[in-house]
Length: 302
Image 1 (tube, rainbow, N blue to C red):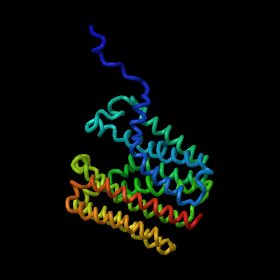
Image 2 (cartoon, rainbow, N blue to C red):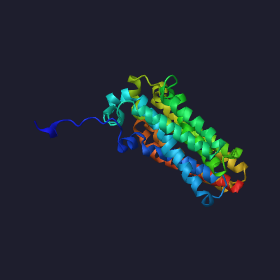
Image 3 (cartoon, helix red, strand yellow):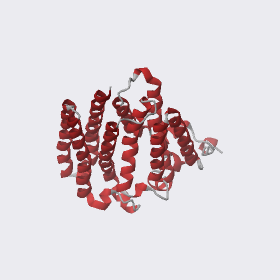
Image 4 (cartoon, helix red, strand yellow):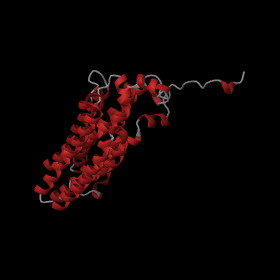
């Protein structure tokens, strides 16, 4: 018998490439960017505390965000076995219950590092981790409803990461209220960004009884809502920057918003076909406004 024709024996342990794949590194950028906004907005010297910056980036990206991705893949393993059987868990490259074990280990490591970085970092991380599990795991499984699921992701990836970045640089102390205000506003705007991601899976969501906003409101209704939810918080940010005597930053964020509005006009003409296009261009502009706002607050607090 030709032994080379026999299937290889399944490994009892996951390989490192499979672990890296299930943590979805490409998704680490949004929380790491928001963390960087928090670092900048804190007003604290960055180069003098570079080790905190590195620890915080690891916490926001590979640990916190990576945990949420592993949790999501574990609780979606039955659906993925039908739709994407080559993913690490349904394919067996992460065998047995190792998907769950990795999620628990990553959760523990994340919270341990957060505890070392200070009480406010730990508190924000604890909330973020609770949302990560509630998003995917029963009994809550917030991803089943676009209103709650998108809000949970928006606050985890943007707001809590922003607050964590500021708190890390402040030695674990509570950030200034203006930092918190920006974090909340941009988190709300991220709800609209998450809605854009749901346009590519409308048929599958209907079949699996996932009540995304395009399913609940229809394509046109969800597109209008996503645009409004992205734009209104940024308009409030502009008003705040002007009130804080930061007109140059306010004007810059106004230009950022104007570019998005022009993109929204084209998006709304054919939302289902242009959701990915708008997500790629509009979100890039959106996060630019986040950093501009962070520098504005840094100027107030430095």
